[in-house]
Amino acid sequence: MMLFGLLLVPSLLAALLAFMVRPYRAFVGQVNALLSLVTLGAALAFAALALAGGDAPTFGPGEIFRADSLAALLMVCVTAVATLTLLLSPGLGGETPYDAVQLRRYHIFINLFIFAMLLAVAANNVGIMWIAVEATTIFSAFIIPLTLTKASVEASWKYILIGSVGIALAFAGTVLGYFDFVTQAAHVENALNWPVLLATAPRLHPEVMRLAFVFILVGYKVVVDATVVGGYTDNLLFALGMLSLLIGCFSLVLARNYKRMLAYSSIEHTGLICLGLALGPLGTFAALLHLINHTAAKSLVFFLVGHIEGKYGSPVIEHVRGLLKVMPWTGGLFAAGLLALIGLPPFGLFITEFALFRAGFALNHPWLMGAALALLAVAFVAVINHLNRMLYGPPPESVTVGEVSGWRIAPLLVSGATLVVLGLTLPAPLAVLLNQIVGIVSRT
Image (cartoon, rainbow, N blue to C red; front, side, top):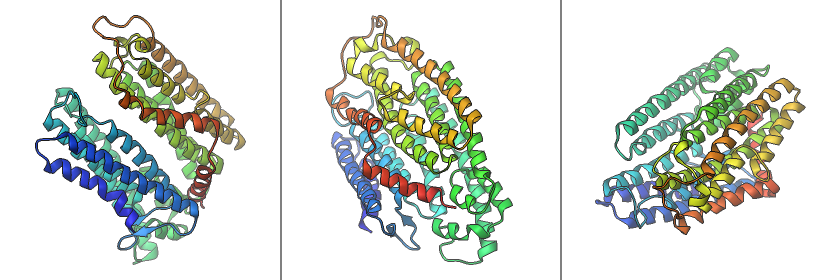
């Protein structure tokens, strides 16, 4: 189908353009930003097809690509953030702290990373999905040390190591699941395609799938639910969710770097999503909506911290004072993004967290929900404390008062507006799409 080409090919073309033009020129970044609009349009078209109902579009030999409701939602999230990233990337014109070599490397690998992300969510085949996820680790590792320093190179290697361990565990789970599938179903066409695995799931060995699920956890949740009874997957998701909340929330207390603060916040919200996926259809709906809101909020604040670090020259919280005076728009939006992330109204994350905890209490998990609420209270106090120190007080003498260019602020207002809209109402098309996904994820 042409839409799959429009989704995947523009990122490859953008990477190829950045590779071919040497030295780097500003028009490369500008063309890349325009091409990202094509991928966003394709993702929205897939979402429209999902809303229309009918069979999910497929493409390729053995239907290796498929765009059901879940894939369409993830495509929209990935392409929306990718478009925002490329529109605000360095090297589109004006001053930049990076040289031509750095900009060329950045635009090559950011587009390859986007391609790998889209390939992973569009893949209907477990093997292709695994390869795509591994590729995201490799491509992003080239972007981390954009400025070559000992710290950045070390961070890149640590990222590769940690990411590769996770991918290796996922591969082990994939192999276990595949060999059990072959034992039960013998030779079947498209054996690694998700619909084929799901259809065969009731005949698989529960013991093998329990072990496989430990390795890959969320990836095979639907398949394992159809094989294993007794809430096995939900219990593991509860454990992982609470562990993530515990680590994320107390790491926020100890945070001294505002970039790491946002990373710890992501761990916290990953824990909430895991809890939601284990709380039945209502919890799954809340978790999916939480994913959308978190995408908008976290992309907003991550772009803003780039502005903040560029102005103050440091990622350390203690070095940032008087942000509202120095950069009123950046400071205001940064405050709004962090308030959204800690679940305050009128932002969408308040609604999703309320719905998630409502689902937990409805399913008779009062102690679990109480513990999760206590951890969120810890995160709330920590983030407010860090934010208060950054926003107020006298700015350092070396920092000049002045906002970044308006064209770098304007696109971020879309993320802020999305958070407010989803905090006040749930658009009917989005509700339909989420209910369709709940039907996929909660299928037993």
